[in-house]
Length: 113
Image 1 (cartoon, rainbow, N blue to C red):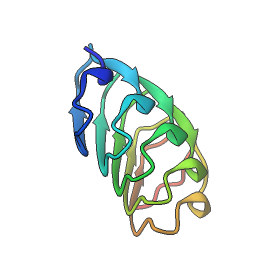
Image 2: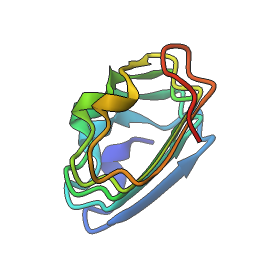
Image 3: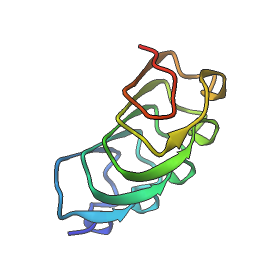
């Protein structure tokens, strides 16, 4: 399947270990406020492609997702990035709204939980 098949009214999206589902972050509902995408080997995109209203974001072991922390939506309050080895940036690049942050086991990010 594809992320494009998700209902467009879905504002809370959780996808975990679905190795045959493909798509790009830009295919997610633009009004989504919760995005939880884990171990989705065929999901690609850049952090700047995330819905701009996201307040809760968890990305884990999504090998084709790239980007810089400075491109995260300014609405993010809760952020978990784990094993996101194509993501770069520093803690100073996080949105000022991010108050609940966990960065763990990422190749290019300083750990902070």
